[in-house]
Length: 321
View 1 (tube, rainbow, N blue to C red):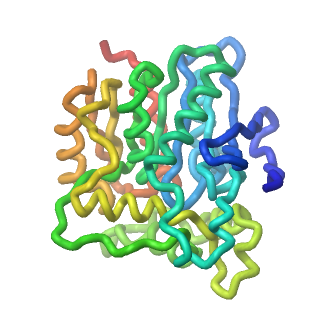
View 2: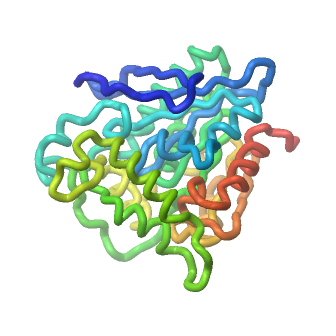
């Protein structure tokens, strides 16, 4: 499959396409190097969640400033990856077939191998011994699986809005290979967990700008009868399995320091979820659980994003021994 041109989000941004574990498909990496003369330590790799890629998360700028900019300002060399099927990475051939024709694409087992390919490339490119990882939502499942299997390659982990294991009597329904995510679905995700009577934490104007860029992440999004972005359904299947009691990795196998960061109104990473995960990370050399007020599962795009920036930087710097 031909590469799709990736516009630079910053004049200093660098782009790379690397081989993936799936033959014939490439993983897209975007890098914003650390500022000259400022060294924040090991490189940071951002791992996105189930519905939108790196350009719309860590690299997305509101009023000219992104989470990535904050990390670079603190001295970090920041990388973002797009999983296969997202952003500027290769698309699974099965995504051109009917959704019911194949099992869910992009499950955590394979996604963790994509992370491994990205981490090894970052290490070769930067000559760093290890990489720190910031992972969001479903991305924490894939990143947790990678960190458990490759402890020597991981310095620190920030699990932002992590998916934890729950116990449900209902078995998850069979998932398709892919699904369409519409702008209205995304808007509901931003507003549905805000309690009644609270002021908005993301303006409709800012969402519309973000939403236009979201549709741009899939060249065919506006040509469908149902306007929206086609994404692999594996992440949704992984979340359903986790909430049915089958998390795709063992948190006890992770040795690196881990920070759990979540919002006060995050229904996908509740107090009970954080408590379970914190206790399950019993082999981690350091654990931290941070809850940020007036924030939901998507706080990196909300008014409290600066608190998220600060907490992640403080933890990744490692000045805590």
